[in-house]
Length: 348
Image 1: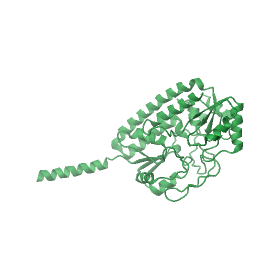
Image 2: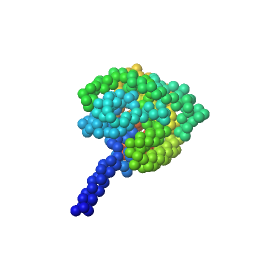
Image 3: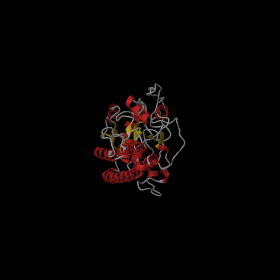
Image 4: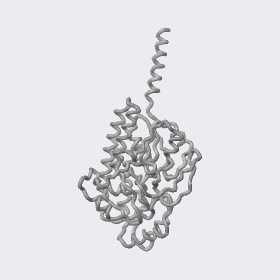
């Protein structure tokens, strides 16, 4: 009897230890951040993606399962209010006790301001080509300005946008000005590597027992990104002199990382269609500046790209900063870098 009682005590103690060893529950906003978290957590747990692939992050209503995942989260990794102006309010409502990590606010994040107008200034290209003080990805200190103030009036899109209720019945209030910090920072591999370290550090604090695994996974993730960067550099080297136009200004982090600057953008942002005057200006840019390719995006109006291409010899291809068609998981982020490079090179 005594032995049986002792066995029950040991089993109960082991059950408590197992419960305490459960990894933190992690939620992320968009697929690239989900991939970085999945890489760090590999072998320990899996993060939850809150904004489904293919949906615009700027004005999004959480589905019940996504709201539940946010409510259950211990840690929440997200890009910034500029990308998801509704997100922090939903987090405060659903998961007020969760740790909220806004990645764009990290000291290690390289941040650029939005560009204006259909034609991008040549000054940006000239500044980024000054290699004094460049890091391993060719970033100059001139380009590494980081404003830590949270400009809540900024947004990714231009013009008015219909306000959409969130999971709690509020509205997103998503008619923001296209100004301030560009939130598409995940397209800079330097930022992705810095975020791997940040995610690993926060998880290690919350779950010391698995800290060695988190840190080892972050190192492996950074090595995988370095390998992808080398491949993309080689792929884009023959076409760096080509001129191209993007659908909306979402790629400058990628452009700077791989030294392949865009000539301009059809749309200021993706929250509303561009004006007729801006489309005409983009068409004039394509016709008059030797543009070889105009990049469309899968979520947005292909008719606008056709209008810009009309009467020109430029080609077109579809690229996607959020990797809508890629498989989620740890390998998603390096695959996104490669996918963008392959699609860009193929158009030329």
